[in-house]
Length: 70
Image: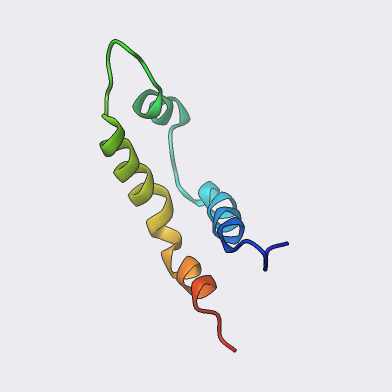
């Protein structure tokens, strides 16, 4: 199945590595939760925050999946 969908591999790596990030779940929830009356971050800031916070630390593994050695 992973060969059929490389995006699944990326997600699995990120989910596997997320526990390596020392985070306060309550604070993360406040930053990322939707509130129609007040937004701590707009959607673009949330996107950038999530990418840099969670995906940057495992970028080398993601790149290795994208360009596997033969």
